[in-house]
Length: 360
Image (cartoon, rainbow, N blue to C red; front, top):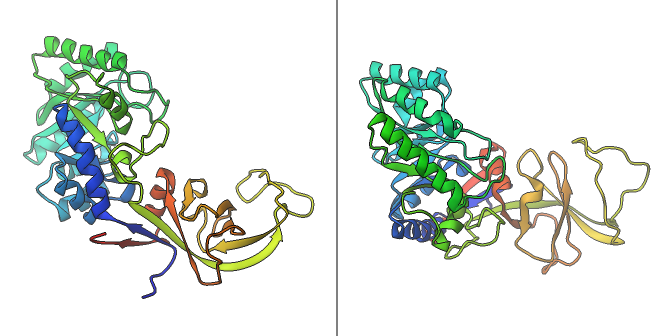
C-alpha cells in the first residue's frame, strides 16, 4: 500500500521500551519522571507509550499540546514546561496541573485564574544555575517563593532548573548542590516543604548514571533520551535505548549523474548562506520531495550508510547516491533517522504525513 511522502514514521512500542529503561534508572534514584511530549506534538500514541512505561506525568511546552493530552489521557498529570504567558493564565490552569515559573507578575495572573476557576495550581519556581535561559538568579529565589506562597490558588511544590539548552552548561554535582541550597534557604524562609527538586532534562542523565547526582534531586523532565535514545550532551546512543524509534521517508523525484561542484559564478543560496562543496567528480545524485520547510536537513542520517546528504532548499533534498547499497529509481523511497531538530520540524510541518507504526 502506498503511503504519501514525505512522512514521519513513529514507532510507539520502541519509544515505550526506551521510556521504561530511562524511567527505571530514575526510579532507582528515587526520582519522578515527567516524560516530554513536545517534539512529537503530544501524539496520543506516544503519550500512551509514556504512560505504559510508568511516567509520573506528561510534560509539554505548549498549552495546545497539553489540551490534546487532556483530551486523550485525562487522568495523567500534566506539566507545562515553557514559562507561561500571563495572558494565557486560564489555559495554563485548565490544561496543566503543574507549571514552571519565574515571574511574580505571571504567578499573580495564574493565581487569579485558579481562584476564578476554583482550582489549585501547582508551581515549580525556576532558578538559573548559569545556563542563562529561564529562572531567577539564586539570590532572588527566596523573595519569589515568599511572594508565590502568599498567592491564593497556588501551591508552590518545589524548585527547578534547566541546563544544557541555551548556554550548553552541563549538569554537575556542584550546580545541583547549589539548587539544593536554594531549596533549603527557601524552606527556612517560607516554611514550605518544597519537596520537589526538578533537576533538569535529558542532560542530567549522565550525572545520574555516574552515581554523582545528589539524592535530593527527585524529579527529571526527560524527552530526547526517550524519544530518540540519545545522550544529549554528545548525541551518542544512550545506554539501554534504541535509536530506530522514528524514521523520515521521502521519495526520489529526480535521479541524474551530475558534477559534484556547481558550475558558474556563485553567490548566496536561498537562505543567505555561501555553501561549500567537495569535488567528488561526476556522481549519481537524487532529489527527494522534502526540504527545509519540512525538516532540518543537517539532522537527517540516511538509513543506508552509502548515501550522503549534500544539502537542500525549501522543498528539495539533494543526495549523493552513487554508493547506495541498492540502486535507486524514480519513485523509490529513501529513509532517514532524524535528529532532534529534524524531528521537531517534521512533527510540526503540515506537509509531512505522520504515520503510527504499531507493534513494531
